[in-house]
Length: 180
Image 1 (cartoon, one colour):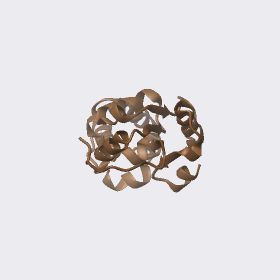
Image 2 (image 1 turned 180 degrees about the vertical axis):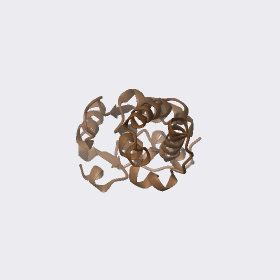
Image 3 (image 1 turned 90 degrees about the vertical axis):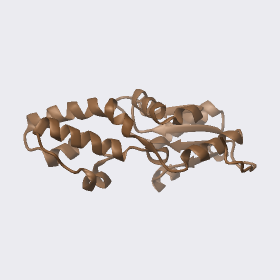
Image 4 (image 1 turned 120 degrees about the vertical axis):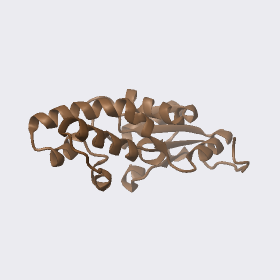
């Protein structure tokens, strides 16, 4: 159900940063780290204080400060990846008001794309788990083994839309990403 507001859009397409502007992965990240530490080290922690600094970094960074043993770190890394891809998906959230805003955008016949730092299979699974996928025209995820770069991901969406960058709005959480 849309909000009932009507507007004439200035842009015919919008690209969202899936990982920062649409999906809140912090509760899933926290759950993954806490469950992993309990399983590997039989130690209960509260990962909340680590979220801001570590939730966008590779697992090995947060595990290195929590576990001294290299073997424990390897086991924990494998477990983090398994939990993240399965049970942690239930902990993903969409930011407040996102669904209604996406409904309004779609009702205005504006194409919606999303870019992601994650590999395609994981990004798609997250979009599906949160229901965001039903709004998306295109999802451009980071190919396995490649570094995150906004430009190539946004260019892929623009090519799919058949539009120039000036005809598209970009919504992200990081000013540097928006500028790119």
